[in-house]
Amino acid sequence: MEHVDVLTDPWIALGIVIVCLALSAFFSGSETALTAASRARMHALETAGDDRAKIINRLLLAKERFIGAMLIGNNVVNIGASAFTTSVLIQFFGAEGTLYATIAMSILVIIFAEVMPKTIAITSPDRAALVLSRPLSFVVALFGPVTIAIETLVRFFLRPFGFRIGANDAILSATEELRGAVDLLHSEGGVETEAHKMFGGLLDLAELEVSDIMVHRTKMRTISADQSPEDIVREVLNSPHTRLPLWSGSPENIIGILHAKDLLRAYDAAGGRASDLNVKAVALEPWFVPDTTSLQDQLKAFLSKKIHVALVVDEYGEVMGLVTLEDILEEIVGDIRDEHDVRVQGLRAMPDGSVRVDGSVPIRDLNRAMDWDLPDDEATTIAGLVIHEAQTIPDIGQIFTFHSYRFEVLRKARNRITLLKITALNRARTKADS
Image (cartoon, rainbow, N blue to C red; front, side):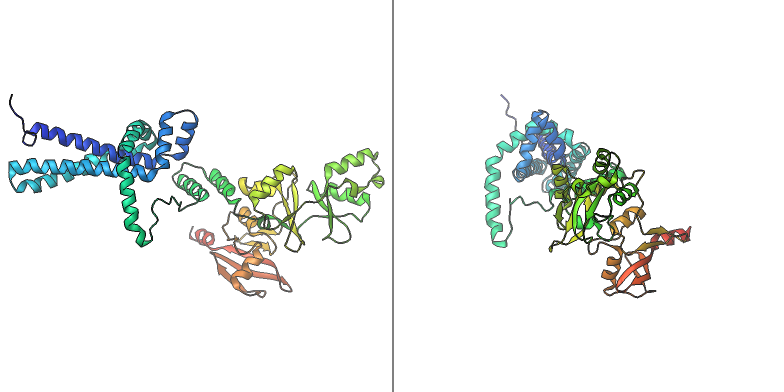
């Protein structure tokens, strides 16, 4: 039988190179597909009973080992193909065969084993990951012992330099990752602006406190329990709100929350005689919450207690304001208006594009009403923002410019700014240019 030398037979050499390139393409494409695959999509498919998605999720749980197996396999086949091609071309071209092999293998590996498979995988990573899931599971199991040994060796060499390998510490929290994904989809047109705002508002609930959105006590609509029942009924009917804090003695002494429907039931039970009403007995017990309560926790508390109104108190127990379930929902979905709602009080748009704002208007309400982006990290009201930025209590007529807005103090009451004129500079320039 004629002996065939695999190192000199061109057809055998070509076949081995093609196999090595195919394996290299498999390793490169697999790594890209699994790292780019949607974890949420794979979790949903696994929940629906897809075994391939279950394999992918198991591989992603040990991502370091999976990537190590892909690198080992990729390097082995690439080095093997290059070495074999070099040995064959040296026999045909002598020393110049090394140069020819380097050029040829660089082109083949870059195009067919790197760029092309990764491009295909990144175009449809979920589908590619599902197709490759079972072969990948076999390869990772095959290279498992080698990968573990290499990981151990790498940790040993990097430990003196303070590197923590395999700690699986996430750089971003789950909330930040979700926010980043939503922002990316919005910038690419995959999520509409309104949906993007709602996602952002939902994610902000854990970062905001009730003091950030509460109605300040100076803006609260309250009713004195010391006046006649007839006057109380009249005030409730004239109020745009269905739930009103009830106080006695002084406005700071809140003794209950009066619900308009409960008052009307009692009024009907009294045969329409307001003088027979015991308003204090009708009122619900007030619920006091700390001003540092997060909106996420407060929303859960509202839902569990089935109560829609809470009074916000500071560390000394003094009433600071009032927060409602609707206030929290509006942080998610935007303004919820009905036929009795009043637009933001203390806000008036002027013909020249500026806005006259009472100093006590909350920054978040102003941003929502005007579609602005004034920061509310350091202050709750617009007057507080001006004082924070100016680092002093300004005088009437002083003008400040910060955050691309111009602020002019129009009126003061002692040390309190009561009226401001605000102009959005960017919009003013755009209007002037047009």
